Image 1 (cartoon, rainbow, N blue to C red):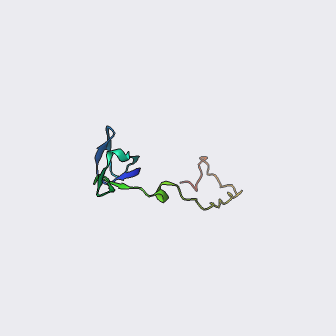
Image 2 (image 1 turned 120 degrees about the vertical axis):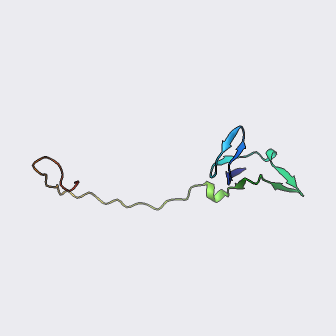
Image 3 (image 1 turned 90 degrees about the vertical axis):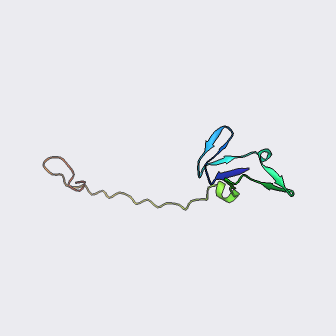
Length: 80
């Protein structure tokens, strides 16, 4: 099960910091009245959060063909 750490904790011989996402085996969780109970320091990551959302196409403007004037020193004045 994919989980996210909400507090610092240890799992699989590694320190897990806040925000870390990792797979946690259900065998490491306990059952209480027939329900699976995760450790208090993790939360389940929903499947919608795991898969990246499709991004909208990005429009790129063509750079202008106009050349900038250079000073006598050979440095672009627009950059300065």
